[in-house]
Image 1 (cartoon, rainbow, N blue to C red):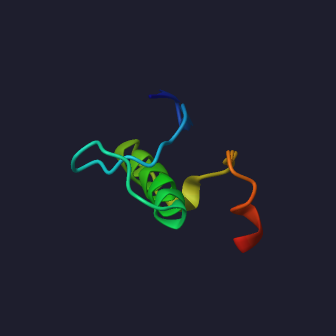
Image 2 (image 1 turned 90 degrees about the horizontal axis):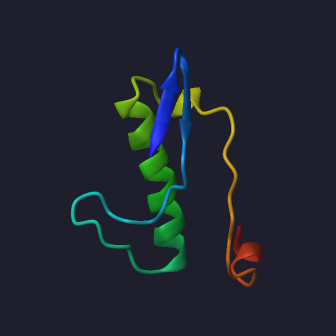
Length: 69
């Protein structure tokens, strides 16, 4: 979900579902990549691009994954 107020776009949470089938992708790296791809798709649908993303907040449930990035 999201909202566009003039030139500004706000979104809800991005999750790792593949837009082709609505199912989560498998694996931590694939899920992270999918979330960022979904963010880019959202911005494109709003008329922008990933260059227009000003702020993103990332929550990782498993901190054991974090040191890899």
